Image (tube, rainbow, N blue to C red; front, side):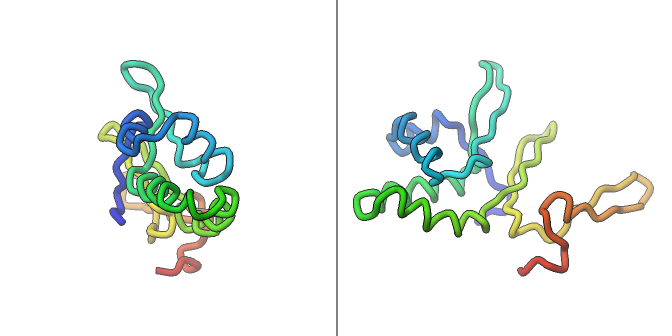
Length: 134
């Protein structure tokens, strides 16, 4: 998986997979798509919803390929365990927005501009750097 995940708009996602707005939000309600993947951003046309592209596309393809063989509730239960490994940190800057899987983060630091660095990994990821398994 790309460590710097691009974002895809809700409109483009719906068009790419030919799914309805209703289906997308039903999957969200059932827990098939994590809330944190729904990223609201201001645009010139108002507020739009975006998703980490590789995560959402992989998930939609999986839902579409299994929805005839397994109940959505069963799939949601199965996927909820996997989502623990797919939580993301989203960083917005003047240069753009990127998302990073928490499982892929080795360290996050802040700097005072004078060479002093402070490890803020636990604050961002919820775990100590030593606790992570890579």
